[in-house]
Amino acid sequence: MNVSQRSRGGAPVGFLSELGPIEANAITYLRLWCQSVDAHDAIARDFQVVFGETRGRKITDSFEALCKLCVENGRRPLMRHGLDCKCFGADESCFANFIGYASEGAGEDALMIAMTIVKPEKAQVLAGLAEDFGLALRTITAKCQLSGQAFHGNTLH
Image 1 (cartoon, rainbow, N blue to C red):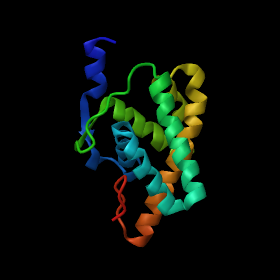
Image 2: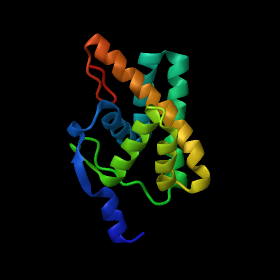
Image 3: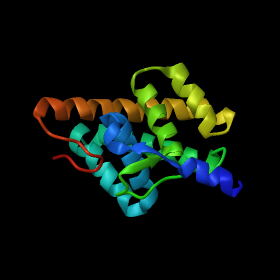
């Protein structure tokens, strides 16, 4: 990968505040997962608080498998901004839209984007994992809206 490709993937394209909650939280969780192994425990706690231990663990496992698949089978490294960064880059935008489509049940669109993230033979698996994670984010967002809480990846307020 040359410098131009690397900078293109990380090039700022917008602000998290401009995104819907599912897309913004997809980016936040991706950044958090990539930050450290300790952060994986925080992600698991979020899902267990909302879905209970068994279902929360399944969602966590799907998300971890999704991230590992992106890292281990990516067409190129997925560029990310820092955890506290207010903007997001081109690769993060792609990831957010991928999760957004998957959360809506738009499987063909999610699969098309998955093929730009990972090697084609892994795209179907990635799209399935994205649907699990996306639906979880959709459920969390709906529960928070009903209860009057705000949800900002890794924190329920």
